Image 1 (cartoon, each protein chain N blue to C red):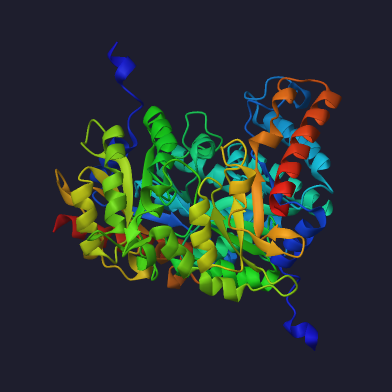
Image 2: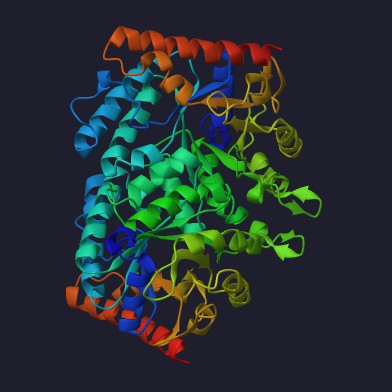
Length: 310
Length: 310
């Protein structure tokens, strides 16, 4: 009878437990830009053949996943780079997500979706439901359409033990165009954070105290991270902008709080800095590529591991 | 030499020319909810077999497209309902878009995408570029990340003769949560409209005077439509919310202005009201289904044709 009330282990509990075990909050972004994929993974000219390009991306990211297994808690595939390859790209993404799950790596799909009622249900059915066509552990959402458009995602996430990361304060140069606009003395992103608090409650976890509602808060804006943390004390942060985008490890964990194994409360994403390390550029040698990727991964893990121990 | 400066015929010119010829601004939304697809297009139980479900959606929408050919200027597939079927759904969408193009129906993909720099370029390469993996004529975008995130789309749209429809004021119940927030006396959606004006200029058309920059402005908010029209006098409006969502034909064209063949300046979308007319519910008979769809289509065309002639 107790089972009736126990939902599938919540996303937040699964994520934070794993982050504590590993000792760092690194999330590796899978942004398969085509140009920098090393020749090692290419067969002939990629751009002229859709099918062959998809195979190259699959081969490259499969090899990346194998390096990440056992070392990171979560990956963040950016779906735009798979959509760029059409339906073949989505088929590759589907396979990679399943492979990551088998390797016990959580999948946070960066899709920034958002739409009204029945359409939001369509997206939730696509990615979050127990019987999803392409199941992932969490997804990023855009709040511009209003909080009612988050509800269908929250309902399905709650049922299926999935997570949501809603854009609050992003890390791009123009992020302030709307997000920092003054609304009665508060920036708009504060209004967004306040409006999300009901979903923080709805998606409350059990074992770790963290909610499966998350917020995207750029590493380049530590002051904003503190404002969002006040509004959403139990929400996980997805922090982009670390590494290639210029944010330091210390700035990236500004919204984190003390936990049993150091600062915690989110994940910090690095994409290009790990996927395309300078030493691997243009290589056709597997050992050279593996060493370069491992070194980039070690460095990010060390930096972030140290930052949460401060 | 003149050819150096002439981009491919702009989206706005192609759309408005066709709307003038047909005498109405109806856009038919392709939102393939699974439950109401008539048995006519189903073979066995759909939900238990991904491949079979995709085939049913393809069969249904192919039949719909055949009814629309020669009668509407543009369709608006909602990509969420294809993503719901995983990569197989995207393959179906790809085929439908190509079929629509052959039938001289423009394709406005409702994807509400939005992301930073290189990721926005990925989406643009997916849908808008001349060599796009899944080419469409226009796409909907979400502005929350800032105006710099519209730039990559505008650049590609300008080069390839495509259109952009940016969410300004949507038609859902919670649309005011952020869009109506007061920013120094102006609602946030007004700030968005003002910020988009540079893209209106960048995407200016030639033959018709209309820009290939568009704005999504719900039919249930005619006052807001006038505010957006002031900021964006040459932008096409995509008006959702007509029909099933409760907006009247007269309200839907509030943001339109007098043109050579009546009011013009955008398209008015109807999805469920045409795709799933009551008389076609549960039918397994092709003639019954065709008559019901044609009648729903005739009614919307008449209503909107009359509204633009007032």
